[in-house]
Length: 638
Image 1 (cartoon, rainbow, N blue to C red):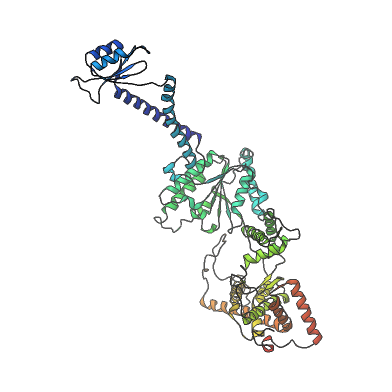
Image 2: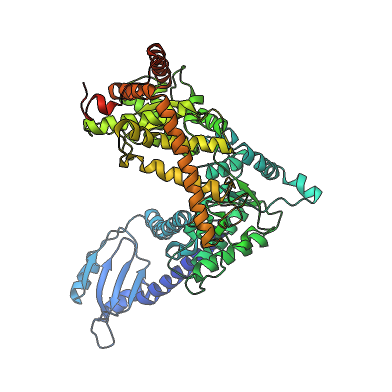
């Protein structure tokens, strides 16, 4: 929350001072009217005493305070008082006391405090009573933004001072070089706005960062503020909406008012789609509050001066649902895509996060980068953290390569189910299945196999064959997709050949194979029968997520043809995998037996097993041995 301005503090002080003056005047008038005391000479007091008009006397050091009787000679609560002056201090009180007793007047003595202390107390006590509430009020203004109970319309933004130590700069951001290059111009404008103003250039008023979650959109916005050395206002789109109507619009106005007072600065709104969804087809009553907030945001963006020095940055995971009025020139002029990093970007991100840990010299982050395709910055930061935790669990002084690999497995496959014990039948089936995947991958031009394991994981996988792509691909050819399909079918085919029947373990492989084949037929034009056509209408524009089924734009007859072509593609790779595994059946059995014994095989171990099995087969110059199922019954492990 931004601190209240000096103007607001001054207004509060003036109003409070006037109220205090009014209260003091009213209190003084009340006290003066209530006491009704008057000063009289000492001799006049003696005359009133002798006339029996005195009811009560209070003897003080230098004066006598007397309470008068009313006209009927009685005493009442509202009796007037008089103060007799001119009495000399230190005189003999005996004659006066005798005269008071003679007239039946009650009396008492009172020792007065020194005049200096009395005056100080009379002045200091009211001042303290009045200044304390003033100081408390200023402190509450600073804490609540000056609104107190009525601050519901105040912006809930947090302000980060980019000039302090520990600020975020472009050196803390990696893997998004293209997005960083787009924002260098914005940083230069915030540093030297006069250079652009002299040329009449208009810098974009708004920059929209779009990309999947975790790619570093918020971090990139903080880096812009840190490089420019300006304040950074940050809040979420949902912070504008409350149960009261009109609160969102009020908070938008207050946010921009605070930003103008601290310009040049950056205002960052995360999850912009919470308030910026398209108004097309929306029911006005159901979304009135959100629309009012959006309308106020549109006005503020297009309304403030180009020289105000306020730059609005926002982030969204779903730019396709934003209102077109937000994306027009003059509001969000520029859209910067913060995409998933490639292998070089992932390695750079890992290097940034590895600065904070004690990394072993032999640890290779390049291998970790190849093992994590599709991961974003947040995932990679978690990999480094999990590796550090793993090293701490084994009481190591540095984070080794094995900790990094274990962290990747933990994120991709889940935790190891050490308490789960598979039956011998299940373990053999899983070993054959994963051996089929690995051998087909080794026999085709698919991505190289990095590791094979049959250790169960919490994500539901009983085993996994991990492949390590050599290059980051943006495009895939027909042969590459066919190789990928063939590897997917290798596990099921291995079960058919070696165990005589299939199991439910290939369900995930079939799902991925069916989807890949359908994409090849419907979107990539890789069907000879259907030709270079695309089937299924998609929404144009930047789409980061699939939001549901595509719109169908083909006939029932074409749908049947598509189904036939998908089946042909999958069947062809199924037969190809069968041919590979039958031809290299001895190698398949050797890998399966090694997995049953060791549970996890590295690439070097796989190469050694394959070379040894092929060498033995050539020496015997015979067909591969009989299936495992005929040598020993399923589940019998010697």
